[in-house]
Image (tube, rainbow, N blue to C red; front, side, top):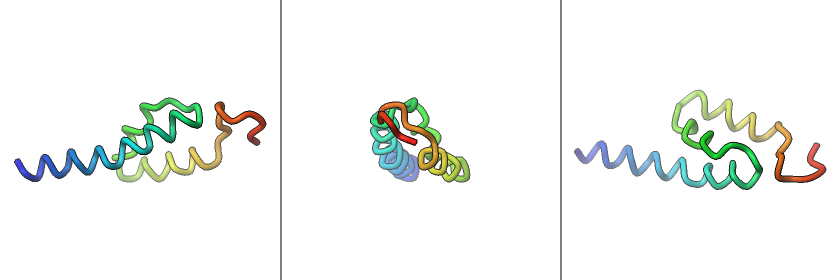
Length: 60
């Protein structure tokens, strides 16, 4: 039971900040849930770094 709670806490520590980041840059917030998937989180970080942010005008 303790391992499950630790995993849940770790997941929340990862998801909550990315939820706010994706929301602020105008991307779908649910992408933050995918940040707990090991290899997919690297892909999402590159996507976040190199895509145009809809919430930021004139971003190219």
